[in-house]
Length: 144
Image 1: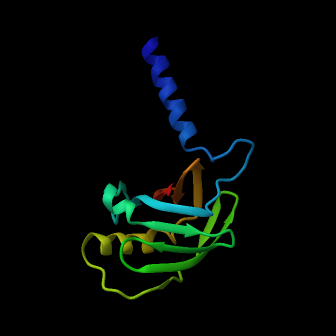
Image 2: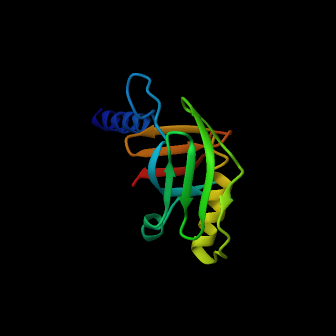
Image 3: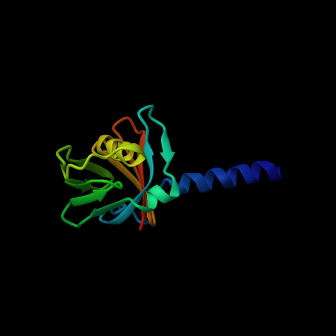
C-alpha cells in the first residue's frame, strides 16, 4: 500500500509540474529573460543542453511581443503573440550573419527551427515548456 501511495504522490507531483504557472487560471507569462535549458533534436526528442552551453544562451521577450535571442553565436530577433496558453511565433527572424560552427551552430539552427514551431506554452515559476502543434515539447526555457 505504501508503494502505491508513493507512486501516486510522484504522479501527482509530475502532473502539477506541467500545469500552468499560477493558480486561478492565470497564464504563464513568456515575457522575461530566459536561458535555453533543453531543445528538440531533428529526431523529435527534447534534450537537455550542456550546462556551460545553456549558460551562454539568452532569450529575452518584452511585454510587446518582441524577442531577442542568442544561442552562443548570432543575435536573433523576432516577434511573438501570446493569447492565454497559445503562442504564435513569427518564422521571420532577423539575425546577424556570423558563420556558426560546431555545437553553437547546431544549437542555433535547432532553435531557429523549433522556437517558431511553438504554439502552446506550459509553465511553472521560472520554467516554460513550449510545445508544437502536435503537442511535442520543443523548447524548455528557464529563468535567467
